[in-house]
Length: 395
Ligand code: AMP
Image (tube, rainbow, N blue to C red; front, side, top):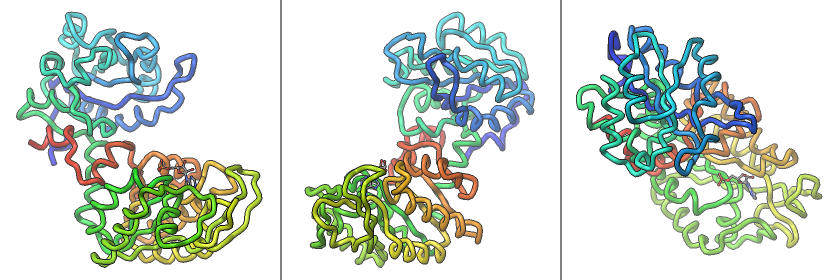
């Protein structure tokens, strides 16, 4: 893997594609600087070598130049995080951007305006990529969140740096973490797949089946499997047209020697409401008028045994409706088990939007080996696809 660690940036201008697509409040204050903080190690290393840095990012989904999506709003926060001055140019192409880049001295940081102010960015326009490329001597991609997009700044630009393109620290760590699970994993490998729907996880399940030993299925997905096997699921969420698919997955898993663990009991509620009445019932005997919203105690006990015996754990999707306190217990309990396994030496990777927010919400983030920052990009890697932003560096 070509990373910035093996490169001396002294006297070089590094063009870094970062993911500074951060949330802003109504006064345009950054409300969560995680993504800026995540890019800091890459920026620091380049500056420490005696190089300079040109930061390129998108923010939101602007239609043309829209001030509310200007990266100007994040300059102050970026300066705070980096602990140094950040210059900003209100364009990413043309003479202003060009001369700002040309004037850049070692140790200095320049942030270009939102790349998506030009439709050429998302169109992967070669002319735009070439213009961006002309500002720097080296191209660094450190934006995992957009690595699955063949945009001008994430992919196309790399061809203008045949001998000077590399991964930043963050992107390198993401790739490494995923490879630890998908390629160089220590056995037994367990995947926990939760969340609401089978349909959104099916390609992931198919791709990982021959890489894992155990599959724990939880969350709303459960009920499609249970109904397909003839169970009574009451009013639980179910994708009727995916029942056949669910049976196929179970058959394939059996063929490949993967042990599938579905909940045996659930916390059922008489409404999709935190204050609903609840009862613990067998997963395949949920009364009409009731819906399963969390894993039950016996299921959690069994899941715990599987997790504690695992050496590699992938977690994608919550075990219940964790946003409601009364149905968050299963997700918290599983998170704690994964934390315990991690403490005893297992490698744990958490990814996919909702499990990441669950892990953050319950303070479990520091207890996991790796929490992925790129939702869509991570899912596509788990689906076995080659991400264009990664391939462009490796080619
Ligand atoms: P996904 O985006 O597919 O990973 O699904 C995450 C969502 O699934 C979360 O918002 C959960 O609240 C929801 N979820 C988990 N378990 C259930 C359930 N038993 N019934 C309905 N929704 C659920």
